[in-house]
Amino acid sequence: MNTYHSLKESDKAAYDALKGEMKREEQGLELIASENTVSPAVLDALGSVFTNKYSEGYPGRRYYGGQEYTDIIETLAIDRVKELFGSEHANVQPLSGASANLAAYAAVLAPGDTVLGMDLSHGGHLTHGHPVTLPAKVYRFIRYKTEADGTIDYDKLEALAVLEHPKLMLAGFSSYTRQIDYERFTAIAAKVGAITMMDMAHIAGMIAGKALPSPVPHFDIVTATTHKTLRGPRGGLILCKEPFAKAIDKAVFPGVQGGPHMHMVLAKAVAFGEALRPEFEVYARQILTNAKALEESFIGLGYEIVFGTTENHMLLIDTVKSRNVTGKDAEAWLDLASITVNKNVLPDDPRGPLDPSGIRIGVPAVTTRGMKEDEMRMIAGWIDSVLRSEGKKKILSGIRKEVKTLCKSFPIYH
Ligand SMILES: *Cc1c(COP(=O)(O)O)cnc(C)c1O
Image (cartoon, rainbow, N blue to C red; front, side, top):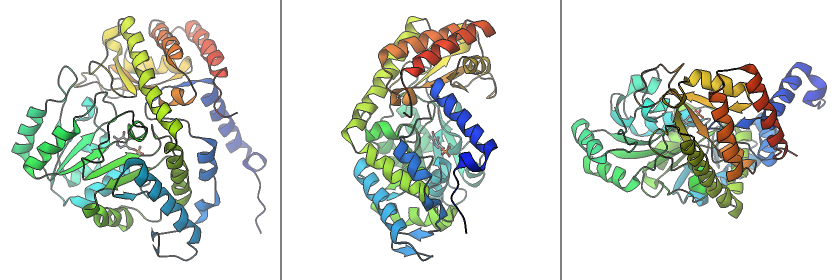
């Protein structure tokens, strides 16, 4: 028989790495736009015995016995997320954003069908048709771009749609900072008879918290990740209008996945419950306020803000133009100062993805810690000092100490 031993008692190597990561998160500034810090309740759910259970199928229609509690938690997650976004149907089983998108494509497309999606260097995600991905080999992706002022030219998009006759028109992004005009986008799709899909992975939490307009009433299918601004476990989600419900569920299981990860479904239910509380709206609004404060500070310091401005939780900065530092150096130097960001390609970046021209900075995780406008100004100042440091170790370790001191006042798990 198994006796329960904690990780600390049973596996020193694994436990030490876990302690190290906890310390890293506690003592550093997490500014990766796709990351967040989940609640202890979400962590409890993820570390629960639901990881033991196989539950292929959907509530009330499973292929294995012993489902009295899995049915309860999956129904809870579905009901809560439908309430949160006002959607007609929800599938909470996708293991990640990529598998949610794969299933959504599989639900409505046949091989060879045409999809309009946003170009990667203009803010779109890999899964929106980048040539290195499987969907790009199965479907015909045509990619649209942003204009020099950072906006999307909808007349141009309409002309492209008329020319290419897409079966699916895909909106959504992972490094774009402007608001999409959902009405205009879906009107274009209606004109050419395309199905509409929005991938709200990055901004799902801001939409849930009513800080940004919702695409859900406008689009046939809306996919998301649950771990970015939505502040839940690592995972995916698909919302859709009723006529697409059956196809979506079949495409997730058995189409592209096997058994759902029920510990993750429990954690999603918990996170959706948290997002339904009034405090979450305060959180979502503060993300927007913090992003604006950070942007103002960078503009004051003379930085080049990509796409003109931000209307969500992230900023893209052209570090080459602003400080003559590449994205790769900026990321590495900031790491040494305990400030975590990612290097990012900029629209039609002349440099490659491994050493692009800029960085992406997001505020969801530091906002979760309780940081506000004053801290954003400090953060912009530190980032500027790092970019001016020429990578000098002494300067970077000095900033690292200041960062650690600030982080002490904003504990994560206490
Ligand atoms: C993050 C993201 C995804 C992929 O999510 P994973 O969980 O990493 O697979 C898909 N689409 C968009 C727009 C994203 O930002």
